[in-house]
Image: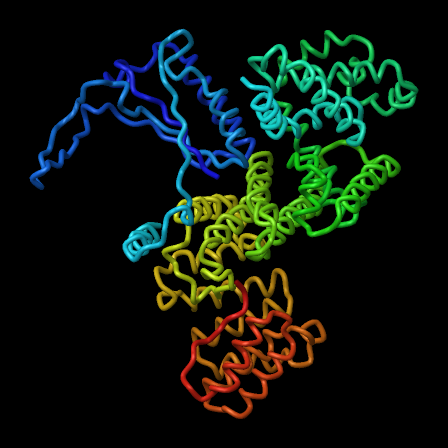
Length: 139
Length: 433
């Protein structure tokens, strides 16, 4: 089963500010090395600030409106993710517990963990099949 | 945390840490059986302490320290001490362990990196050629996978006492043969690594051949093998075949959801719904293959099989398959790892690339091959080629022969159906999954 460990954004990540010293990056590197060494790391990436992104707002009247970032409420946003494949929910819990304080020790931050749907979790429909066709054409 | 939650958390910690703890302790006591017992003792300690005291901040380090202290106690107290001291002469810090435990602690802080080295020793020891293949598989799952004997037994559809006994005997064999706890050097490395990779691929295939009604532990073997493969590739990053095996397993695993239909019946590769292939695993497989090839390993048996799997993975549809490249890869594979099964697969590819007549010539050379005497794909492929060449009567005989040889009911139905309808234009059914 796969879980995504999500780091929520903070004012610093939203400002594109990296910690001055290398401690945090070193901790992240060690953590991800440990994941890789345990054979559970699938993917990981950091996201650029929402100032460089945009949202598309869909209205009740069917309208759509592009809203450029940055967006308010940094803690509702995502700053990065780590995708792992483990044998149980408890293992995911344990790995998430070990995730370094994402903004450095003593700095408030939120790490969220979500399980991914696997193909067979979703009820089969024709549209879902078409969705998969698109997915399959990706590599 | 509730009592039950703590126990589940401890179990998860154990799954993550046990191989490292066993590996580290084994370096001290030079016996994987004893090391596993000591690591288990540490687990028992954790089960006693943590529900009261809560999980420590670094549970892995706690388990490691506890197991190591037990190891040191044992080394000091045991008769083992005197006997092992001579053997340990070469390993200064293991020798120090007898005398000055604090020195070891200090050393350990400086050599966290050596955990990888210890793990690698454990991998090579569990897959040592002095053990039977069955024993290597069981011991690897037990020591490196952290699986219980019950889980291994369920996965391999054998009674638990059989596995328990197999593991006990394997540990005894290693001890009696005085197998050194080390990474083989120089010339010995290649064949020993081949044995490790073989064990991992066996575990993978055991899971891959699971069917719908099986206990979930069987398919879980695929994930476990993939995990072990990734670990080993990480430990020997310069060995191309380790990456080749990972590539092969990632790509094969990407097809898991397409390999059976809604009724759990097998679906052949060329008929699989490619939208059900997992693009993330394909991407990872192709990356591992690229790494393997960049290391100069393109001609390794796993690399070639991975490259073949990659040909299918890259084709958006069955029609888009690059059969000429598949033929070329099978030609290399036939040189590197010749076998009649490879030859039969090559024939199928030749049939797809250059037409049935060329393929039939190859298939007919396999006619007298004793290793294919009970292999139903031989008459099945031959029947298919004959059908394409318009030789319906001969094709029918071959399909009937193949149907009589297979033990799989669904395959038999399909073959008999083809025997009945031969003469109709029909799809080729290549061997393999």
